[in-house]
Amino acid sequence: MELPLPVPSAGSITTYAAVGIGGALVGGLVAVAYSRRFSSHDAARGEGISQLPSEGGRMWFSEVSEQMWPGQSMSLEISQILYHKRSKFQDVLVFDSTTWGRVLCLDGIIQTTDKDEFCYQEAMAHTPAFLHPNPKKVLVIGGGDGGILRELAKHASITELHICEIDGEVIEVSRRYMKQLSVAFDDPRVRIHLEDGAAFMKRHSSEFDIIVCDTSDPIGPATTLFENDFYDAIYNALTPNGVAATQGECYHLSIPLIRRLIEHSRKHFTDVRYADVRIPTYPCGQIGCLVLAKGKGVKADEPVRTVPKEMAGKLKYYSTKLHRTQFTLPAQVHRDIYGTAIE
Image (tube, rainbow, N blue to C red):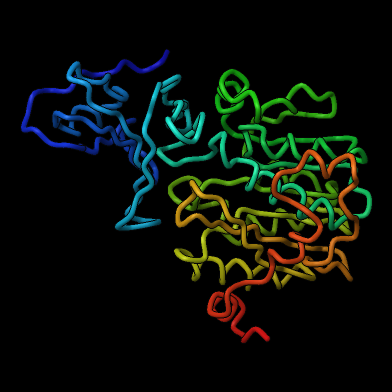
């Protein structure tokens, strides 16, 4: 059942009070703004987000992680909480915001908002897809909100769309509340696998033309998705000319991690490149798409197909021109990631 909402206790008057919820959250806190302060100890028992006080206080969500982005947070004003529950694996929250539309958060971290989700979904899906001449069988690891599936489903050549999501509740919540994201779950090409992504890939050797890993940030259980063994499993599951894309983290915050992933991946893949994706509600407004090409002659910044006219009118972020330019990084970032100067 959905978690009850505790009423704040009386206390000193303050404008905003941050409150952690959902027990021991991985990588984030949910914050609520009140005109009356109350203790985070009560909310930390997993009782949910409190109702607004009668004197007209405003309610806020704040994304906080002292491990991933210390000293900063992203806050959105909440107009209505639609769903809040702890699944077997994580805290799941859906709310309507006053400015960014409907928002999905997992373990206190913003996953999607109505207003900017297309930036991430299109970059992660179409960048690898347009590097393959004729993708047929595709795998999405994670991505339970359905956004990556929605974009991949636009490719007519694809005959099988597999998604491996460990938390089935994320899929159900998205189908219920995130309608614009979850439309592809009804596509007859989609096959849903509720299990660990790494274990799934190890059982499927040389099977998928495209693999997209829509992973959470490397905190808690998700740290395994950023380890060398996981990238080895991706290589194993790709066909000889296959291409993969993984969530590559923010270059303002995670240069050592990005550099490690690139250095390890280059031991196997013929081309490994970091694409710069801009999305306002992610930390620092930026995230990476790490592209891994298995086939010889594939260059990440050179798509082998152009966007068909019938698809181009439906896209909001990706284009053939953007595909090439997203691999051009700021000079210092290029040096930090690749260890060489940019021309």
